[in-house]
Image (tube, rainbow over all chains, first blue to last red; front, side, top):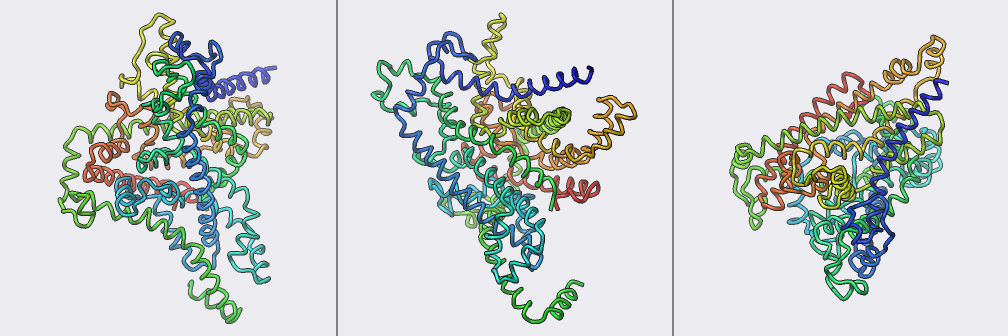
Length: 291
Length: 318
């Protein structure tokens, strides 16, 4: 039937696009499992000539830098996200309540920052010269705790909750903070999850903060480590003795080790996130409707 | 009017409600306080930092102590050849990103909508939003895997076809195309989610009626599906135009490997400000450029928001 043929055509186009999105990642993985000699001989290939673990061996042999960066990334992502969600939940709840007298003013105060910003330079001077956050862990956490977009998402959802829900709790004598934590928050789980996931993703993928503010190699994030590795793979082999057996500095697996590092840096989030896809779809649609 | 309203309520419910409201408001203020303070420090205080654009900043003198020099910083920037180049690059590339990005995202959403099997839709969506989860550094690695001059996949292919290799990272002419491709690749999946969600809201009756009238599939897409998402397309594109003066720093900095040979076509306002600040240490000029960007951006957002408001006030930002 004609309709069937059309369906096949549509699905093939979409399938092709889907493959365009994941096949390039496959290339990275394939390179990371290639032997350096094969790369030099044949170039990067989608299927390794023979599977080889030297790159991973090389990275994991001297894991100090990698572990440091993992710890910094994990801590900053989770602490930052937890604090951020908590702070934004509170302010969004207050702004969703019509009895709050400063509702309009604070909403404007927060949203104005989406329209106008001082820009990179004044922020840079503030953080380095006045707040002394250069080379401090807290520079990952403090500056990005409040995101007006996420507040819009949360507030819109809170506003849609039936007023009776809150009124009845009030009659029972619950304070506003308790109402938020025990009654509103449980109902708002999907949108809170969306905001938390978006925040987590943003922080996990952050390299810019480290680029601007961090010189101490103990404090750099995974993504920034990855960026630095593009320029000097030597970071990993400060001690030549640490090279895997029978390997000299000349046959450092620089090409494959870089890609192995990319796999290690992007891997965890990529494995986790597809499972939360439905939250994104849902949360973003809530966001498309303005409150 | 408003005062009267509150008056009525307090008369109705008596003093008790009034003190209760006061107590509530106290908690509301307390709950807002952390966000308000953080925004004050990290967003509002830097706004006053724009005075830097009019000063000859010296680290030892601080912001207030440095000497005023009027518009010298701006003069220096606008008289250089850089001003034209980075402004044109920013506008031209962002404009293409918006147009091409929307066409592809809408097309994908329309195709997805034609697929009725839920599992298939889910598979396509999940794979297509994959690139969205990658950091720009990883994206830069992916691009590098294709374009590396000696081992890259594209040059391999060229070599096998008997063509000459191209040293991609020193040929600026190719980069507008490469950047558009990368930008679309990273975002089309996630963008199509929004359009797809809008399509899901269409009442099935329209299609049933069209079916009875003998409309074919393409006609149904053209006369029912597409028109029903035109409002959201218009609004999202207008809002994107409002941000056209801000470039995606990661895309232009990481994906090009910050290669100086490519600046002719890849240098945008954001990368220029960054370099002026970090490499040249020129606080005055970089903040002048930053202020130029902020102000033009602000005006653009105000204009586009005004337009959106006229079309559909529900979708305006404010």
